[in-house]
Length: 191
Image (tube, rainbow, N blue to C red):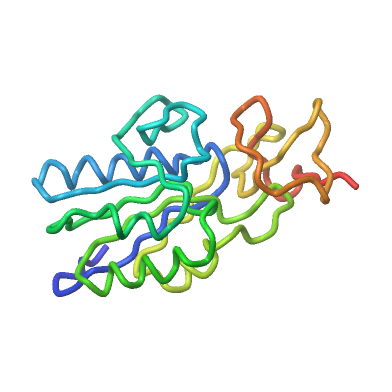
């Protein structure tokens, strides 16, 4: 990967649940911290599955993060001199997050984001598709399909062991009690 040295940029780590997005975000943030760069990490306040004040991966890795309710809080909570901004679960933010990422990158900030590219229905999720188009670096990860063992690109939501219905709410915070990684062939949507 070529590094941009004269400006900020946007990176997005995406894919289905259980592909290692948060783990990869944490890995990149740790590397930056070894270089003594100033970091600030954010996550949506509604994602409190594992911790209120930390970004936590499914394998238990964690990194301190500030929970925010709205993208505008990210800008207002940045200290002067922050060189790297990390944002996890970016799919939960409204479209305003795109302009905030662009603004930060335009101010020579490295912006590293992670989030689902598709919702449980298999459709593009929130601001992620547009961020993928605008980012300098895009990493689309895959999990392993729990049904057949093939590479998984989708997130399966289950309600009482059955595929969620298409008209169910798009946002439902949960983990392995509700979601599975599935390939295109094994992914199902009810109704």
